[in-house]
Amino acid sequence: MLKSIKATVAGAALVAGLGTVASADMSGTLRIMSDMSNPGPRAVMEGLAADFGAMHPDLTIELDIIDREAWKSQIRNALSANPPDVVNWYAANRMGPYVDSGLFMDISDWWAAGDYAGLDSVKGAMTIDGKQWGVPYTYYQWGIYYREDIFKELGLTEPATFDEEIANCQVIIDSGRKCYTIGSRYLWTAGGWFDYMNMRTNGFDHHMALARGELSWTEDAGVRETFANWRKLIDMGAYVEDHQTMNWQDAMPAMINGEATAYLMGNFVVDQLRNGGLTDDQLDFYQFPLIGDYPQGEDAPTDTFHVASGAPNPDAARAFLKFVASADVQTAINGPEGLGQLPVNANSAVADDEFIQQGFAMLSGNAQGGVAQFFDRDFPAEMASAGMEGLQEFMVFPDNLDDILDRLEFTRSRVYQ
Image (cartoon, rainbow, N blue to C red):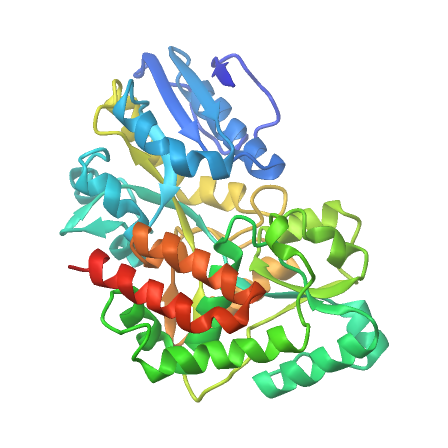
């Protein structure tokens, strides 16, 4: 649905009161297409548009919010025909297809001009071929969110090693519960499990070498070791049944109702679990446990804004990107009343929220292996698609592993030529 937001709209914008002053230097229309479709992110996006409009009373903002999954297949057409000015997307390799096809604008000059103070540490994630193609506005940790009250009931503590994880899981299964909920219908959740199993089994460098196509899916012993470790959980019945029929939200009631005790997920799940009725006394978080003797690598996906190469109003787009990249705005939108995530700007403040603070501590002090963007962002799009299909199949039919690896190796031979 297309929503025009005039400067007169007050709304309940999360970034209101930051001391911005209305300016008449922008006119015309700024068109934004966003995939921030879940209720919390949608409110943030609408608030950003309303507040930016209040700063520029002669500017009309048209905000089109699209379902997050649908956007993945619609973005190319949206950028090609009657392109908007600004779009949401993702950092690193996920930018590649739209950079290569000339659909994202090179904004290196804006970076060089100092528009994005405080973003130096993530400049690399926005860089392809030595040029910058967007700005980040949030990132978030992944890890295991669990029912602390059930752990206490069963006498369990947070595991530090995979052996302890398996031991805990057996106690949970013996209590009549599943260890993990997951909805793999849209595949990416299976990608998260592989990321952690592989980074913990073989290390971050191995995982990124696999993402770059430098390792064989069929001949690398480490890849098979990863799947062997993962199969230990599958064979013991650790996951909820029929997860391939559910999306990630469909899988939440199992944890909310206590039928499963944990969810490997990004921090955005916290808001959903709280909305489902769980309190912070019932929830906690731990870093994915160690398997091999490797420094921990972590998934911390970075979400971004980009300017379409055919943007009708690039001046307004530039001003909007500078606005969302600013320290105060990133502090406001990433707090527990907003995205519940981490600001990218180094000059922003981290919210006083249990899970945001835990994520900040983990990523800043205990992710020595490196920070990955996530399976479907680190691997090229075609490889990621085939890979996640295979990973979901493995979770349902682990005996198909040889066929799965053969298919992935065939895809690798084509994608990385």
